[in-house]
Image 1: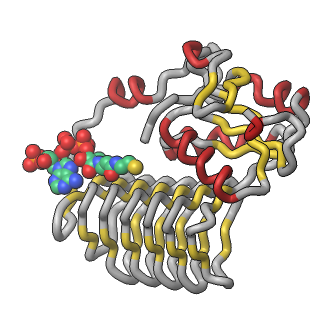
Image 2: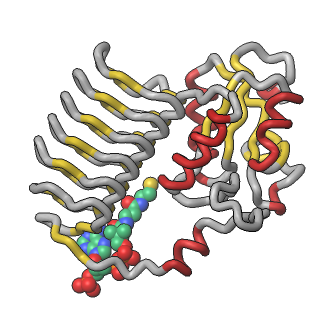
Length: 251
Ligand SMILES: CC(C)(COP(=O)(O)OP(=O)(O)OC[C@H]1O[C@@H](n2cnc3c(N)ncnc32)[C@H](O)[C@@H]1OP(=O)(O)O)[C@@H](O)C(=O)NCCC(=O)NCCS
């Protein structure tokens, strides 16, 4: 495929995570131009040696340092849907001295004075308005709107079709579910979860889950086992809580 020839111009880029979100990131990078996506890394043994959307899976995430060196990589995008995993992995990659790249779909509209961090993914149709600050490893998913002077903290995920009003403060690791709406000037506490379609009209406590119209707090039934099923390290390292694990399809 001429698309992925080794001598193609552009930044030689690896995508970490070959699941659903990884495929979205690949599409954004191909649309945006300027990137030569040379491969995926993923810890799923079944993906090794195969191609995902035509791009080879070159190895595991644990091998990122060696593979980046051998393939003369210019940078990586960490494409893991889970906020905590994405944040941890991005920090580890940066600690290895590998640049983190940001992927912006050409159909997204960003205010000239908005600031955008590293390892940010901005999908098709996103609108980011004046004076917004978008932190590292944030996902602004398809068609999301972020209005003026809103701050989006590290590794938050703003799902497709979300509408965030002006002067909202979204702390790190927040998950805003598909189609939710947030009125102006509220704060979404760190790692809180906003249910799909919720309308948030007041501050949300850190680590809490809110759903409905207007949004109200609920006790989440998700268990540790559920979380483990979603984030299954293919090659866990004994006693290493910061192992470079990766789930394959979290979004
Ligand atoms: C909010 C959410 C995370 C809750 O998941 P959970 O912790 O497993 O919670 P449960 O399914 O046990 O639901 C708890 C209660 O909230 C209600 N509820 C859950 N999600 C709701 C939603 N989006 N809107 C309204 N009510 C909701 C349930 O009916 C249940 O009510 P009950 O206690 O009266 O029976 C999940 O339902 C959700 O909305 N996820 C969004 C996913 C998404 O947007 N993905 C896009 C990826 S790009």
